[in-house]
Image 1 (cartoon, one colour):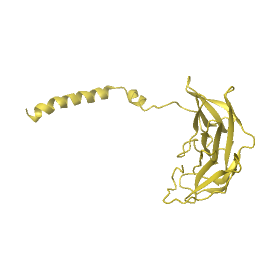
Image 2 (cartoon, rainbow, N blue to C red):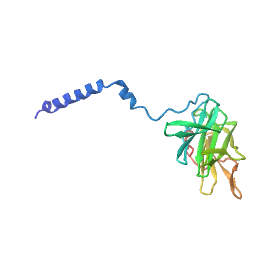
Image 3 (cartoon, rainbow, N blue to C red):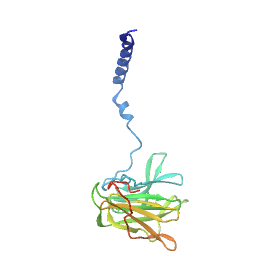
Image 4 (tube, rainbow, N blue to C red):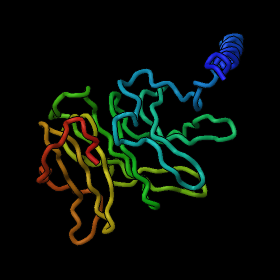
Length: 219
């Protein structure tokens, strides 16, 4: 069998496939790129929350997805719940940070919702002092399906405007926060003496780590 006998039919088949693909309407190709559902506008704030590396604006609780989202009408951040029947975010009216140009990292531990919110910076810029980062703590009412800010909050975690700020909680109940400042990782934690109260934070320190990229995720 010659090479022409093998490739001749294949070439004809390839031509048919190409012509068929070319005959498809343009909308068919565009539809494959559509992913998810459009959320609320973030007009009025500099960066959509949850887009800075390891920061997360979403959490799962009581059978629903929740989010810390910008509300363009009131020009501040609110807690919203996803209505899966309409695929729309429903604003609960519970305010978080009232400052524009902030980003946040959220943590739901099964009992409390923590939101660490900070004024953000463009990539590559060094931390700037004079802009407090705040921790908000909320309790959840399952009967009313809503959150309420706990007494004594928010509290300041640090006094810097940073690219990102990430929080977590260890098995002892101690909260930890990390961010970048001057090319170094900065770490702080709540003081637990005798018990953790989420209010008082230690003086930030630089851990003994090497080769950290300033654009690292911190966490």
